[in-house]
Amino acid sequence: MRLPITLLLVGIAVAAMAATGCEQGQTPRAIPLGMWVWRDTDFSTVTARRDLVAFCRAHGIVHLDVHTRLVETGAGFAPREGEALGQLVEEAARRGITVSSLRGAPRMFMAETRDQTLRELHALVSLDDSLRAVGPGLLGVKYDVEPYATPEWRGGGEARLQVIDEYLVTMKQIRQVLDARESDLTLAADVPFWWDKDEYVVPFGGQRQTFVSHVQGLTDYIAVMSYRRSAAKVLWCVEKEMASAVSLGRQVCPSLETGQLSKDQHISFFGTPTEAMWTCVDSLRAQLETNPAVRLIMLHHYGSVRDYLESGDGSGGDG
Image (cartoon, rainbow, N blue to C red; front, side, top):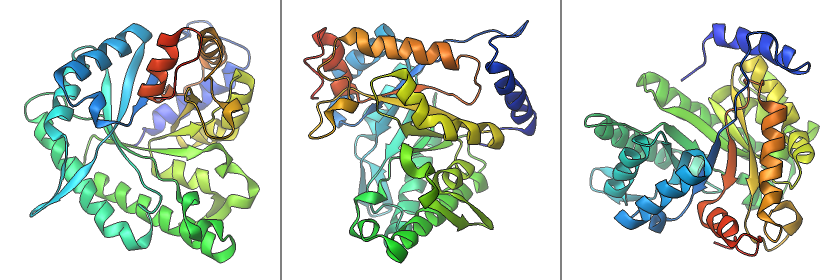
């Protein structure tokens, strides 16, 4: 679902005014929160769904990216917890919360797995069709594909460039599938903040630009894994992506981490007072409230966010 050119022009104009604050007639907004949900057990039972929706309501979370595991059937693929996911979509919608299907694996966008990835996409579109036939459907499909975890990427050089090209070809085909079906499903991707570096300037589709800019051109929005503990550092991580989003008519979601990490623990709020995260959220909201390129502030992920916030002192968050 692409943003119309009128919205693009308005976005550019509003972004230009953002540096000087709100102009007359312009209404600031509290940028909402979104959250990743990775585990089936977080929504597979009535109690789990009730707790998840209540948690979202308590903390102002209005969107969920729910990992959707698929199983192969005689007719193709189907969600392993399709009924539970459908019930979550319905229950969340009643409380103003949207749900997207989340998919991801390091090799998911490589040429060798492209056919399966597209077949799985058709399964998600079919799921959405069935949900919309009786009630609310999915907001969209989101991909958390991290090709830098593959040996080919780590090898650098031409092998890495090939991985990048295969990623973009697959994403383009996903975009084409959704456009051909005239689907209302949004297309989103999780990306690291460093895909905007000069070393990731690559040619694709007749343009030579950063890897992340190509991804932004193919999706409706991206969530940048801008995991840092201060608003200033988070904004530094997403600065280029926000500028690109304005010019393309797309959107960006800065993201925060709350889990206990095996390394680089300093990028997570785990171990800090919960007020530290809320201070960062409040600061981001204050600085970005007039920027139409910012869609949500994403929190990673339900298990750790819940443990972190309920601990009160930051000692939780390893979920």
